[in-house]
Amino acid sequence: MSNIPKTQTAAVVPHHGAALEIKRDHPVKQPSELAPGECLIKLSCTGVCHTDLHASKDDWPLHANTPLVGGHEGVGEVVAIGENTGECPVKIGDRVGIKWLAYSCLNCEQCRNGREQNCPKAKLSGFTVDGTFAQYTVSYVHHVTPIPQNLDSNAAASVLCAGVTVYRALKYSRAKIGEWVALPGAGGGLGHLAVQYAVAMGFRVVAIDTGLEKKQLCLELGAEKWIDFKEAKDIVQAVREACDGEGAHCAVVTTASPSGYTQAVDYLRPGGTLMAVGLPGEAKLEASIFFTVFKSINIIGSYVGNRQDAVEALEIASRGKVVVRYECKGLSELEEVYDALKEGKVAGRIVLEMSN
Image (cartoon, rainbow, N blue to C red; front, side, top):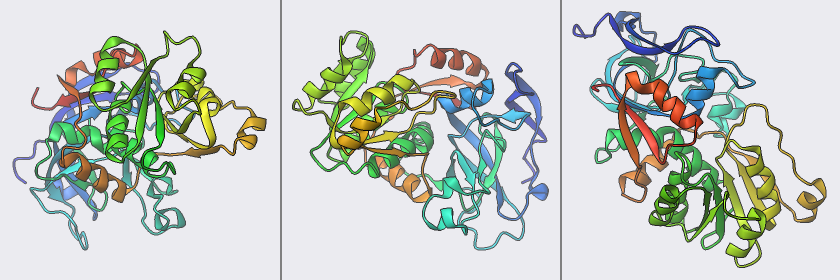
C-alpha cells in the first residue's frame, strides 16, 4: 500500500458545460480513507462509451455530478480494500472490472428482482461517482466483476458495459433460436458486439448501418444480411424482405437516433419485440398505437445489466464467441475520441490504456 501515489492523471469535467481537462494532480483516495465495502483499483485500461460523451456534454435529462471523472468500463488490479469489509469477495491483487453500476443496496425490491441497476440507491461510475478515466479509482467490492483469466484486459473493458448491455437486451428479448434479430447501429461499439452475442445465442442477424467498413465488419462477425440506411430507399421494406418477407422477430436498437425506434415498430413481424437500448437525450418514442396493438408488438426498455449478466457476458467472450474490435489510445486523446463518436466515425470500440 505504501507505493500508492497521492496524485494521478485523470480526465476531469470541472462543471457542467466546461471543457474536458487532463489533470496531472488529481488526488488518489488513500487506503486509510476507504470506507468498509470500498476498494481502490489501479486501472490498466478503460473503454469509452457514448454514455461518457453524454455525461461530459450534459445533454441528458439526468445530470452528472461535477467535478466529474467519467468512464465506466475499467479493468485493473485491486490494490487496497477498506478496513472492516465483511465477507469480501475479492482480494488484493485480483484483476476486476468496473461497470456503469458502481453500487446498489442489494436488498430493495429492484435488487432482489435482479434489477440492481434500478436500485433507488444506485451509484453510477463516471456519473454520480468518479469513474475510470484515471489511473486509480474507488469502487465497491460486491459490484466489481472478476475478469476471466484468459480474457485480455482491453477486450474485457468493452464487455463490461457495451457487451453486458447488448447481451442482456438479447437475453430478455423473447427471441428464439433461428429467429431474425435486426440490429440498427450494428457496426458501432455496442452493435458489433450485439451481432456476435446474437450469433452465439443462435439468432439470425440483419445488420443495419452505413459505410463499407461497417458492412465488412458486420458480415465478418456473422450477420447474414446487411442494410445500408443511406442507400436503402425504404428501410422498413428492406428489413421485411431480408427476414423472409415477414419482418424481424426482434429489434435491439442501440443507436441514439429516434428514427431507429420508429422504424423498428414498423418492420417487426406480429408478436415481435423492440428492445430499447440506445439513449437519445430528448427524443420521444413515436409509434402507431393502432399497429402496435394490432401486431401485438412488445416494447421493452433494457438498461445495462446486473452482476450476473456481467459474469455471463464475460464468460461468453472468454470462450472466443465474442471478439471485441478495438483501437487503443491514450487518456490524453479522450477529447478526440469524443469528436469521432459524435461524427459516427468509430467502428468497434476505443480503449484508453493508462500506460499510454
